[in-house]
Length: 517
Image (cartoon, rainbow, N blue to C red; front, side):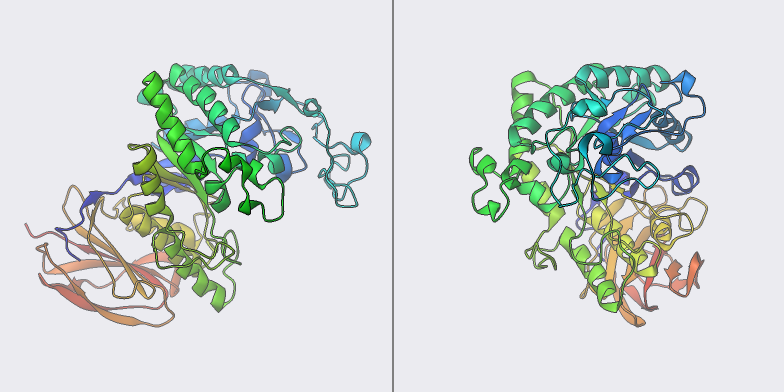
């Protein structure tokens, strides 16, 4: 660890979550919370109703609401923003770009592929058997249907009216209201997830047109608001459009949409168009490059811990976030190095844009293996200078994954946190002992997060420079030995040159080194 080298600010927004409950958000002093997912693409703020698309039989489902007669007041999104105000959390709200929304608050639960209208289907809602999955018994998809079965067309005005409602209740971005707006959700999958209203595959041109219209509309209503896009689903969506993939077969050998745009990969082209808009109109309509990232290796993302081989793979695969030597252990089969890649795309195509990952999940958050991976990921986010991240499907307060966040945000239960200024910290073997160092503003303490990813106790020396410590460091640890608590251990003697200590198997250790006064 060299405290004088590689110093940069760590954004607090990397410790965000999607849909965290209020008690956990309060305990973690959650910096940002996202309201996202497939159902937000078709959410009607006036009727507090969302179409759940392919996630649940393309049904319009009204949200539970204590008094629907008062809508739009008291909607799910109103209550989401109110919770965030209680916990001093920034709201990241997904707004629809797709151009369709549920047409009313229907108690009849309208659905996109009604069996009476479209015939027998492979699967139907067990509670509403007239709502099918849109796939015939022979495996072919139903086509040629009308969007009006569930939805009505909308324009940017619909979203602007929603913003005005929120501003009327909570203020603008600079006065306690919604600060962050995600520009829809995974648009290159609309022809699958929302194929009842958007069967045509999304193209480069459609993404430009919709982003220009809706992002500019956001800035018109609240110039202080920040936008995130394109909220793309994953690896192929970074480089190609859904229109490219539509022919099937080895479509990547001749991606017609990409070729029609000079052969430029989609995300790079998208950033270029956002820069062009600012140069023409003098308004930045994209503030964050937002991508989703789910590891594609078998048995990792959104999955249980798995066997020993899967657990080891989960811990290795965090290297896909940064390591140019790590070949992704999936169909991707090449280095991903996602965060450095994002920063390179930004620097080359639209400088000043901030990198964000608004959905990610490495799985096993109910297991120490997932907690180790999550702690490693949060350290990587800080080191690699990500600006914002929100974990999809967060853990419950009692699960190990929540303790990974506590180690960074509230390790002693009294609000004490990991540092906010990165300092050079490297390991001779990151796959065994990963280390992430940061200096804390206020008291100037040096905080060192050390993650033992192995099933063995490991003893290691730590070489320290550029810092004058007090005699002893405080030690806090979360490990397989006690999955229900972060345990404070005996103080660690430390010199100006460092110290040596043992890190238990499968453990996360936070070392807090007071600065000599």
